[in-house]
Image 1 (cartoon, rainbow, N blue to C red):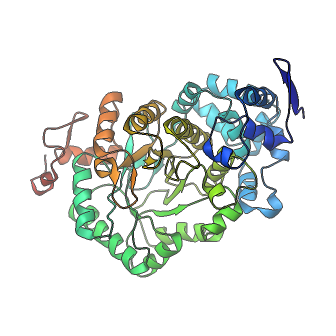
Image 2 (image 1 turned 120 degrees about the horizontal axis):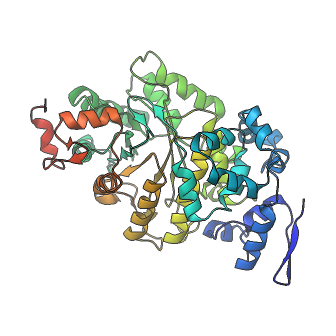
Image 3 (image 1 turned 90 degrees about the vertical axis):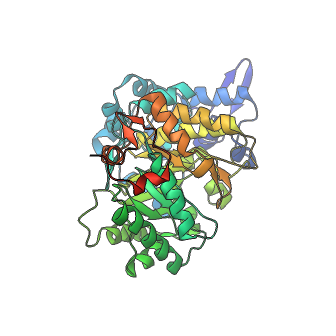
Length: 457
């Protein structure tokens, strides 16, 4: 493999395949922190020129972490489609990029099933932002639980009604508000302040009773506690439709989260037990560039590659939802709005090419050099790219997690801008509640009192 080149009279050499990958990456604070980033734009371009000539098969032979010491690698390799792997293995990364941009979505998704996560990360870094939007827009991945997410012409949202002390009345006030704007067709998902089994079970049951029993909303309820806590709550009779867990791109990273492959499989089985009202998919995973570096589990690999390996792990479980919490970790990993926008487009594309129902938490921390306009820019780009779902947070300001995300109004505005509707089951419910009429919000939308009025027939 060629690992040196000359560009404008200057020689550039790289220590190995993953040094080449890191130097070819778009600028990221996390890669700079880890000492992996290109030193100059010229070095970055030299690395990309060489990476474009690397064959897809190189990543089959040289995974980022050896399978013998990492079960994430084992699951990625064992889950590849052998026919698609054979078809793509002799292509260069440059040719792969060209073929994805030229192909229809179904063909590109078929190729994706034979690509390792490292190869997908390689092609992502050769793409411009517009390339990422165009390629992603063709990749439709639909999943079903109580609602069907990812269909053409739809744009979904997770209603995130967090509360700083898990007060049920406060949570339900935000649920009413969000539903009145048509937010929540992907999930009503609460991040708990208290991760105890008792508190998680209380929130599970209280929100499920209100959403399912009182309002009959066709959606999913989940409390985003650790998977072990959720399993214990389920054993005690807790009600949920989806089980959640954050995942990492290495075995060591997942062990720092306190999870194993068997635990994730157990969660899949537990939520299905005795249920006839759920669809095919019941797991929800979150990822985010930089998480492996933050736990010193990145093995000297750049954060884009490790993020793609998260998607490879998620693919092996056929989840209902996956999203990257793109700007949540902080400026040490993504410094400003420009880096957040790039990472969001990369993560969405990589997830979709893995065949995942990919969403993005379009967000930033208050310590980051980013603002609302950066988030709106990324939201519009992701809408054009066919992103499955984003978050709906009251006034875009999460009062428990203390970060900025997308609001109920943002979700409604993007649907109007792009002519998108919620998931069909949820869309029908909105019509009967008088929140939506012929794809547009009514004058009554945004008023939580609408749920105390008679249904529209």
